Length: 139
Image 1 (cartoon, rainbow, N blue to C red):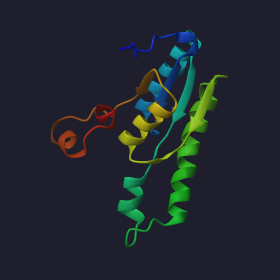
Image 2 (image 1 turned 180 degrees about the vertical axis):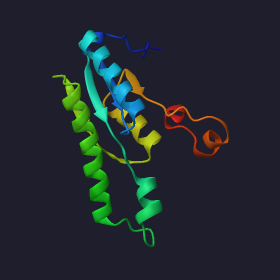
Image 3 (image 1 turned 135 degrees about the vertical axis):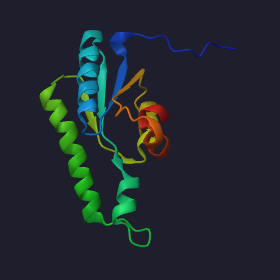
Image 4 (image 1 turned 90 degrees about the horizontal axis):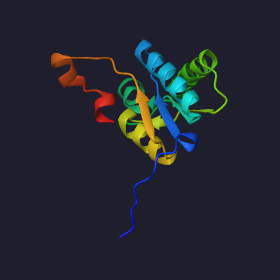
């Protein structure tokens, strides 16, 4: 049986940095981009258009309002554009896919063949954490 373990080569590596507009995700993005620069790695900066939020607030009979969806897309693009402008890097790509955050981050990591995922966490604890969960924890 062949060894399918991928050897880590930092020069050709891919780092997926997931952001959500929070201060914690901006700090994580800065760290991820600086690490990528040090490794000469590529970065995919990703902000998921969270369909669970849209469906719960804007859906009527299971149909998502396209105007609301467009607003969410514009906000996601604004988040990644802001980070890309604040922490410029020539090997940075931006992505704003739709979906459920944890699942979409994992699918993006597979699609982009990411060697590493970097993301912030809100640090929720106690009963709020149990009810809401953590995207970072699920990833």
